[in-house]
Length: 413
Image (cartoon, rainbow, N blue to C red; front, side, top):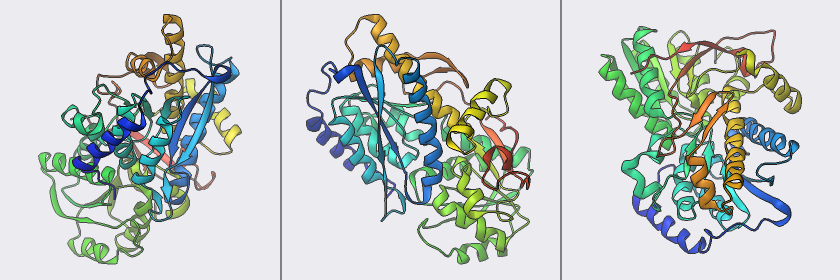
């Protein structure tokens, strides 16, 4: 379900050319308002994480509008859910449907999201055919922006999929370095969740772990919709490696966290940013989540003095503590506003192509520092942060600011 074949991607892209006929003409926005598409998994297993990201996008849009808009335009969010009941969370087919909805609305000039790489793989070729740019703060699978795969994910040529977060080409190997150099693990059992993000992350982690001399005692795969992973947990217990690594999203991750605690409570356990989510705290809970190492594909920002007023305002507005990716989501909204401002100042007519070109040329100071993109849409920064879950009973159990303890930057490869 989470994989997009080359043939299917090209078929989708070809179909979207018909759907997007005429989409490169100048935008004639009614009442000087333009629309920003938002795609997130707002129901199902990923909903709690998606709500945080939606809040960060909306906070940016509301702030932009409060200061009079951008480039003479007010921004209107068009929010779409890419989850389905069948998938139990994000569904690439629904994400593709949402991408078509975006390109068929001539007032949508850019988009924010998605949260998942599988959704990004489904959306990117469709958006490419319409030159509709999208900026993600979560989706980290490197395939989408890999120039070797451009014919699949951006068949029209120029990048349309931009990131304010770095990719698993850095996150996974650097985490493997952390397991070897900092945690001193020698043997590892790897589990992935069969999704685009999880498999890609686990592949990259395994490759670097082997390069660092770690022994992979076994690698197994779970069905994120299944309830019982006892067979794999029994195998892990019998093999007794130094560490367990999980590559995947929270839908399967909460069950891996719970059931691995029951089977091997003292083992070193770690994962990527798929588990840097509030669901691990609220659904897997304590003591099961205690001690897990996770990463974020960005610098740790929430403790910085310059972000404290923003963090407090976010918490007061949305009654929830943000995570680092919320800052990246907010910054993604600022990138869109900056692009609109520069188009207006240049005297060029507003169009999707003009927005794509302006986003590509971004050189913007934000809370995370300078945001700029390479020709493939990837952000220039490659910092990977490491956290360990440690229960702080003086704060709510799902408070990411206080339950995920920052332990440092993962060693670069």
